[in-house]
Figure 1 (cartoon, rainbow, N blue to C red):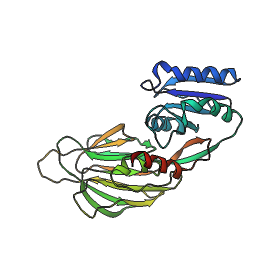
Figure 2 (cartoon, helix red, strand yellow):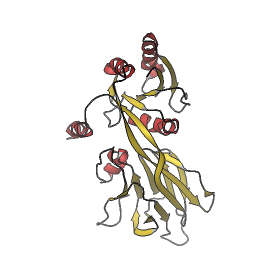
Figure 3 (tube, one colour):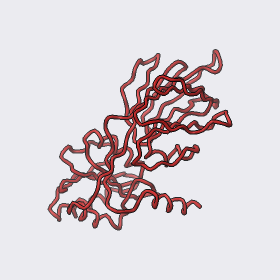
Figure 4 (cartoon, one colour):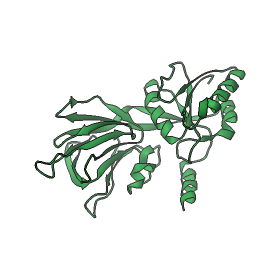
Length: 276
């Protein structure tokens, strides 16, 4: 690889300080490099994208890069995460290694979700690398969410919400809500209720090719009830009673470039030791 693009989180890479130094180093080595802030367009000629920030910055970049089939590698400038492999001190040796072709690319499944509402009809599909979350909106009350898998009724949850996560997203909000931790290379979908008003409510794991439909019900006649759908914590749509969201595996996937032989389980052990 000789053509690179750098995505810099302005909150963590002040004035693109590290990004500009990396760009200069790549060009000294005979490569080509462009640099932009998070959210801007990725050049189609880029062969690899360095993402400077943290796991959140990489997750946001993955949705754009997946459409272009471009691999990403994260440079951690924040808290220890699960996705960003590099630190500032080893980024230049990483550039050398990538230019020499010494790397592997991991494929991470993504989700695709589309809401169907009485107000707006069927909305365009949005992709998510981590999770799609349906949560209550406005007043502090539970929402009623009925889940169907491949058209078959699964359960009705009265809860603060429901998280539908990928294996990559299993170490995020889903884990905080009591969901299982899954190897990010796996192919499955996790359904985890958030603060369910049912002592027996558990996470449910379904196949990667299954279709999940979640319908919002009405708990109190005459009350204005609303829920919100978030994709990787960002783009959202509003649901009212009777509205639905359909979630399934996206056709595209995120490509994460890996340099080290450190396994996910070793990263997991280190993370657990920090918080133990």
